[in-house]
Image 1 (cartoon, helix red, strand yellow):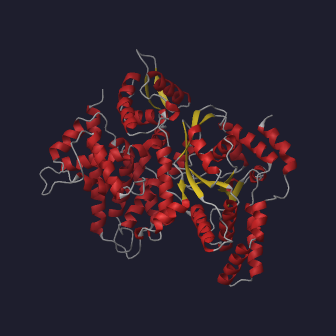
Image 2 (cartoon, rainbow, N blue to C red):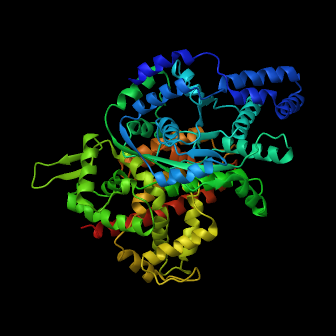
Image 3 (cartoon, rainbow, N blue to C red):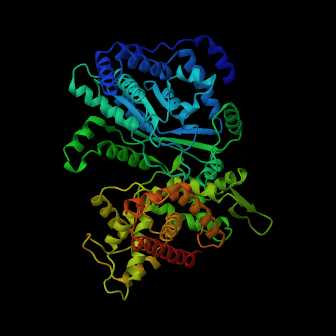
Length: 615
């Protein structure tokens, strides 16, 4: 039976949604008390507030109707037909044990619209407790939204800051679902990544889970009577049809509205096979235990939810496997010419060795140094148009296809988290090497700490103590005889460590971000010291124009750097340095620009070293 036929056969299941959890919530004394309290705060009649809340709850209500769920799963599998979906059964077995005694809250990475099909399908196929998936109401398209709601999809509005009754209804509904031992799933990033790497987490759903636990601690009639296990979920794909559009959006193109025509187009795209998708579960976090630890630490302050969200994001990154597509994209993006298969393998082998030593899993347990694996990956990338191959000479050569560098960068960025620490350590060593003859030589650990601060809104970094230990480990891998963070490196030693390394990645990993930051810093330095704060939308538009100019002039190396997403992050860094406020110091803005420019020069120096070592 085709998915469209399955949906038609499920037609009889339509009608009012009968949600036991919703009915229980509407009878709960604690919910009535919350509504009365909110009515008092808003100076409104309690009956009006309750009626409004009930309307919102009916709008977002979901259930697991067997016939509708079977039809929706068939529809989801059809949507995922471009991929073979790989799941680690050992990870699933550990989750089954937790599922018997706890609610599981799956916070997944978001690279595709397909993620919302993949997560519930895997959970159902592996016989875990059915999951309620939270998704944006923009995807509640008639008639599919009706079946989705009867298959556990909770459609929620995105902009609810000015809707206090809606926020209370959503928070209470989530709490009741968990109290009833329901499992939840949502994108911790809030929206799809436009760059390939994990976006900063959103806190709303996680905050509601924490509120529910606190309510349970205050009263025996609280909404949650069970613990919650937070499970980060990584989803990566060999390739994606959506990437071309997403990279365009990152450069300022308008986002296509989600409507029925959009859905049909997305469905048709999946008819072309694109390889494999990999779904991996991170190490679970017992929410109650983690909250207790954070609240015992005075340094946490009011940031406990943010800290937990970062914990989950770290575990998603750690669970994300390295794909062959990402490795080949990284190698080809770093080349200034087409490569033969032997040349590509010579570039990939040291990278594969490094990833193995650092304990990163390879998707599908592939051998990244195997000729057949890399050749098959190149063939798949050629079929999709990602790489171009010339095979009319003595041997084939490959390069990133014209106009596809942003797409290749997206795939490369799916493993960028595995290389950031290495890249920062290389830049720190380059800074030490450049300090020869200066009044005071640069400390490699202090320099790594400065880069951590500069890039803290781009990447997930561990605590300061753990970060120092990771820098130490990278220095040892580079061949430094270092024992602890008191070790000092002179400029000659720093230069020698870089020159003899068979793997240099700073220019590949960090240069696109540093170039974007340099555009923003340059435009800020050119801003007059006005009595008004910087007009950020105007400055972003100016950065897009100047970034494109610099790209054409080869002052920046990649179109990836001309990105609203990167420019906005650079503005966050500038904001933390008080460079966007009224009457901001012109000298501080110039110093910011000089700092980033120096980092770009160091990345260039490492790129030159890498080119010298290229076979």
